[in-house]
Length: 204
Image 1 (cartoon, helix red, strand yellow):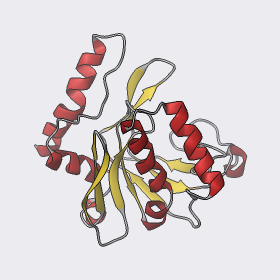
Image 2 (cartoon, rainbow, N blue to C red):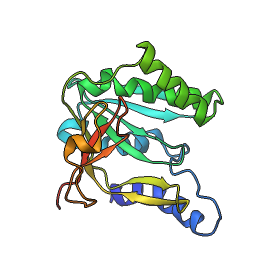
Image 3 (cartoon, one colour):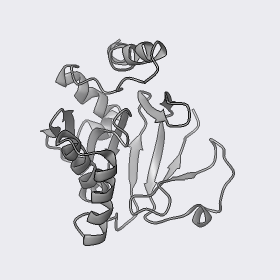
Image 4 (cartoon, helix red, strand yellow):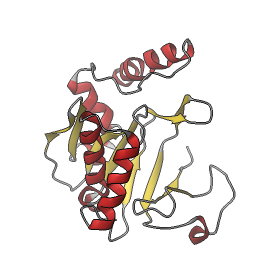
């Protein structure tokens, strides 16, 4: 029942409005009660993991830490694009590395910087050592069924299937054998970048 309510509040309204407009509406609902936004972040991983993780909630001023965890994981709602909705749980390595650039991005959005400015500053941050890529293998849980991404080609919000990600800094498609497009095959996200990850979609 609670999950159904969360889907309705966070996704249903936004997508219904989008269907009647030329431009999509932001998928993240800042007006949702904080407790529900915490549950949205926690939905990224099994409760045995997310229930002991540090949790960040996105406010209009950026991310706010609302709970200190005990297992090294960090759960939050990522937004690689301001319209995205990406419940995510980084392990301890990702929390110490990639997560820091995500926190920075939302802080800069709140300050009014453009996406191009933020991207350039993060790229420079990796070069200068302000940010660093993961130094060892690790896992990112994105197993929520509430994830949505903006498809730039169609300008529509599309459902993000539950999946797992594994750190693969600077990896290319050739590094994983250039697999053909298929849900059953691993793929790379942000290939060649310091925060590149290999994505795997488990079977139901």
